[in-house]
Image 1 (cartoon, rainbow, N blue to C red):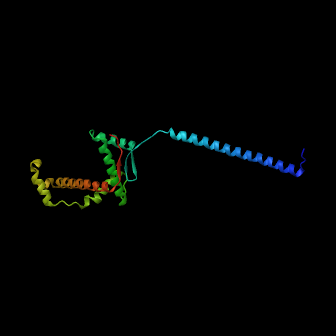
Image 2: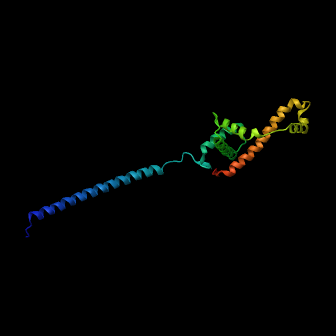
Image 3: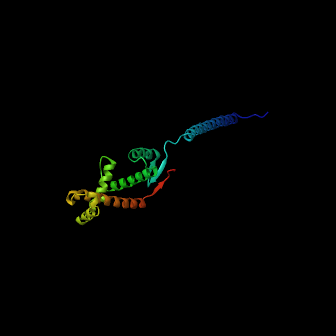
Length: 191
């Protein structure tokens, strides 16, 4: 039998205690990782089982148009125009976004989006339209049958308003085409 000194016995017991401490720390770390893995799995499971609430049907630059937004616009429009298609309504929504963005650049403010667009059209398109007296008389003469016995002076203002609106619509269509050509538009509407 080998005799060991007291100092040898103390150093051996220190190694045994430190070994126990290392095992204890290792088991704590293992327990921590098991807990972390469990939490991660439960969060991942919840995330994986989430359902799609709404889907994107189009993008206009960085602005997404959702299906619910399109459905709301479509329901409102069908009341006025029963034969309209969803694609036409989607294009109208896109055009409105583009016009509102341009109106924002001009810092146009109004209580409603329709009023903002109307103000933008007034400033950007309508103010520069000039209808001459010759244009009015020419239209009156070409459409004399439609006016019957009504004199030119009695329908002059109506003709002028009609010709201005016609020109605004023509310019607005061209302006929207220009805005659309400069924007990133991606439509993902299923037919």
